[in-house]
Every structure is written in structure tokens, then in C-alpha cells.
Length: 318
Image 1 (cartoon, rainbow, N blue to C red):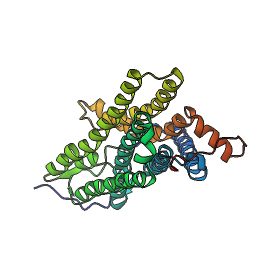
Image 2: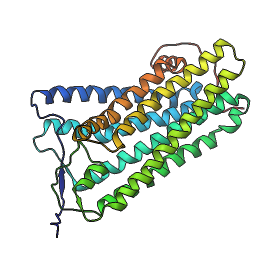
Image 3: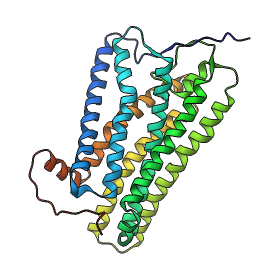
Image 4: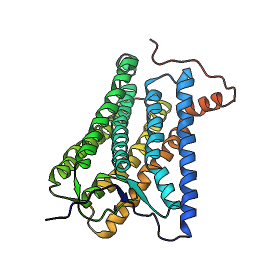
């Protein structure tokens, strides 16, 4: 009979055991976090305050920026706090809460990226019907479905994990709380939890991923086989390229995290890839979109003090 332990807290894995490196890592993570907040916050402010960006693409970009601020805030503050603390622990409730929001926001980003791919597909392949198909009501509906679906998906994992009994060491083999490390500490039958990860999580990752890349594949095929000028072709491919960079970065790190590791070294690499997924991805999203998007750069200049003349345009007016 396994000894069931009443859990009040979990001990977290430290990023490094070298004391001299901990202040350096703390400052690095703090800088990443501040850039993340400033970059995504700036895009969010611009999308809300600049009427020229009232279009479906920037509506979803605003959602993505808001999501990235929350996503990095789920893990980075705890990572930084543990670097300065001798007792690297998180309460049971805090652990389940972190797990919930980690999956909630991660799933939302996956669905949002698919929606943004569909938006680009309609804009490029059906430009004359774009404002009719992607009207404000449809955009709000799509975003709402993404957030609500992800919330209940994460709630499923939270409830199913919280009901488990823990009878092994309470030291998580991870830097923050996630389902897989918690299952390693659980006793009893965890097959249902593993099935949920494999089927539900796998589906909610792979289906949006498939439709996202399908949208861009169709866009590229459409552009290559239609007679477009070099200027139109370059502009469309440039917009798609920035989106594909974000998508590839997101799904690349997700794949490395949730594909079953084959060795102990793979497990260690998986943990660090997860940190990259939750920190660097959120940091690079605003940089990718602003550096490759003239409209966003001009809008940032207008909002933050420079007076540049742009033609007034609202893609939801028709």
C-alpha cells in the first residue's frame, strides 16, 4: 500500500545550483520580463487607441499581446522569486492555479494563431469579401470562442490533477507547476490524466497547428499561381512571414516540450525549452510584428509622440 501524503506545498527545481549565476539569471529574467511587458503593452495601447488600426488583424494582434503579457506573468515572477529564495516552494493551491493559467493561456494562443492565419487567408485570397466575412461581430465571436474553449480545457486539467493523491517525493522535477511533472509524483491510477494529455491536449495543439499552416500554404500557393505584381506579392509574403515566424517559434517549443523524452538528458532539455517557450516567445512576438509591420511602427510613433500623417482607414467600415 503506497503512503499517501497530505500536500500543502511542492518544492520546485532550481534553474541553477551555482550560487554565483543566480543573480545573473535573475537580472536576465527581469530584463526579459520588463521588455515583454513594455513591448506587448505598447502594441496593446496602440491597437486600442489608434483608429487606423481598427481592423481584424490588429484586433487579434491586440488579443495576442494581452495574452503574452499574462502568459509570461504566470511563470516569470515565480522563477525570479525562487532565484532569490532559499525555500523554493509553491503552495498546493498556487501550483494548481499556475497549472490552470499556463494551459489556459497556452491553448488560447494556439487557437488565436489559427484564427490569425484564417484572417490572412481571407484578406489575401478573398479581398473583396474580406470586410463582409471578417466583420466585428465575427471577430469578437472567434476571440470569445478561443478564450472560453481554452478556459474549460485548462479547468479540466486543473480539476483532474487536483483530485490526485501524492505519495512520492513532493519535489517537482520542473521550474514551475505543469501536469506532467505532477503526474510523476502521483500515486494510484493516472491513466485517465495521461489519456487527457495525449488526446485532448494533443488535439487542441495539432488541430489549430494544422489549420494554421494549411492557411499559409494555401496563401502561398494562391499568390504563386496568380498573376500579381511584385509589389503586391512582396507585401503579402512579408505579412505572412512575420506570422509564420511566430507560429513556428510557438509550435516548435511546444513540440519539444510535450513529445515524450527518450532519455534523462531529454527531460532536462525539455524543462529549459519550456522556460524558453514561456519567456522568449512572448518577448519576440511584439518585436517580430513591429519590425516587419510598417503600419504598427507608424502607429507607435504617432501614439508615443511623433506626428506622422497617415490616411485614415477603418477596415470594419463598409
